[in-house]
Length: 79
Image 1 (cartoon, rainbow, N blue to C red):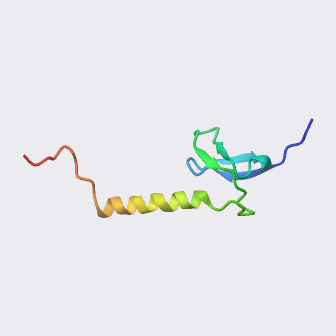
Image 2 (spheres, one colour):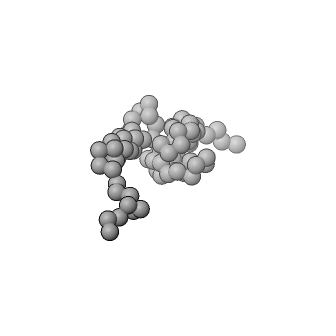
Image 3 (cartoon, one colour):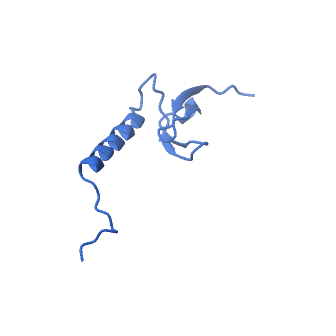
C-alpha cells in the first residue's frame, strides 16, 4: 500500500480547504464540494502562480464597475 503525499489548497470558488495529492501539481482538478475547477498549486511554493487571488481581484473589479455603471433594467424601457 503506497502512502500518498498531500498539500492543502483553498478552492477559489467555495473557499473550502482541499487536500490534493502532489502528483496533481499544475493540473486542473475539481473541488468535490462545489464542483468548481482549479489548478493545483502549492501556495507555500508559489510554483504555479496565484490563480485564486487573480480570480478574486477580477471579481472585485467587476463588482466595483457594476456600482459605478449600473445595468439598465429591462423592465423600465422608454416608450
